[in-house]
Image 1 (cartoon, rainbow, N blue to C red):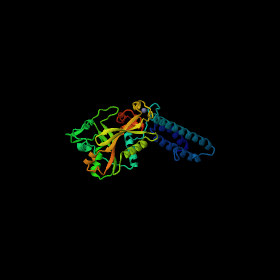
Image 2: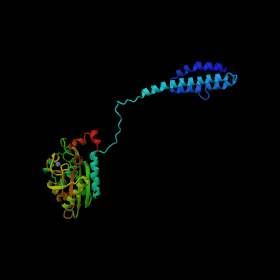
Image 3: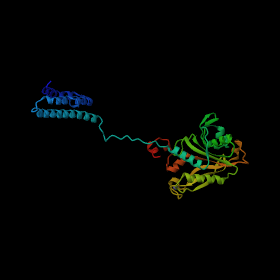
Image 4: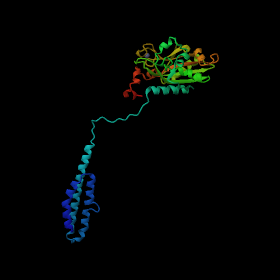
Amino acid sequence: MTLQDEYKKISGLYRETVNEADSLKEVEKERVKYIGRSGAVNEIFKKLGTLSPQERPAWGKKLNILKSDITKCIEEKKSQFNKKDKAEDIFDPTLPGNFSTLPSVHPVTRILREIKHIFSSLGFGIAYGPEIETAYHNFTALNIPKDHAARDMHDTFYLDKEKNLLRTHTSPVQVRVMENNDPPYNIIAPGKCYRRDTIDASHSPVFHQVEGLMVGEDISFSDLKGVLAEFAELFFEGTSVKTRFRPSYFPFTEPSAEMDISCRICGGKGCSSCSQKGWLEVLGAGMVDPEVFKHCDVDSNRWQGFAFGMGVERLAMLKYGINDMRFFYLNDMRFLEQF
Ligand SMILES: [Zn+2]
């Protein structure tokens, strides 16, 4: 085929075949076919040498124009596909964004970890006990006999005929530790407790306590005060917290006391958060009752010590200024994300 014939063929053909391409890949094939390194146009260029020197410049120009026309045609076709692709992947600024949130630790878990950390730093070990307890460990061994009025204070979930139950406090762990180990004891026992309470701002049928037990040959009430005041200081770090101990009653301790901290909002002057008292109740404690030692086969003439129990949710509420316990269990991300 002569240069002229090929020129005629290609210039009459390229538009049609390029426009028939139905994907970017097909368009690229057309580009290679016509204007690639070994494409049709370059093949025609090679034939310029067959022409007379007078004819060559004019045909060279024609071929260059053909090449740029084909290039333009291919670019146009490509841009059609690009537009189509973009239309499918259009960015809509009115759609809500995809926010990824980092997981956070639940406030109750966070407070539990803090309490464990503080008592570990004070030399306490950690003990665990079963959530399904015997009535003996939950009540009897803690000096709460069957007809004792204190059993009424605990609205208990019994599992079978008053023998097994869901523990109403973490205190039975004290008993288990003393039954299975020789004194001295220096432990805390964190865990879940269960009571048949109606859910309200300060009650939940499931809640968390941390029990503590310190027993030695020379442990007195001033050790109790020292350890718990130190705990309050470390737990409510950054604020000067005052503590006070009020006489109280628990069947398993004698004497018993409740520890209050000065209200962190009013500093002790009195406000609505502390019911104008200036003090907030934090935990119960006392010297281990000799009756409890007797149940655990520990010689109370040689060993003395103290026990305490604190509500984890209550401590979390005091620390974070939360006024309703139900927030901990609603799984509302707006609440949980703040911790
Ligand atoms: Zn106050």
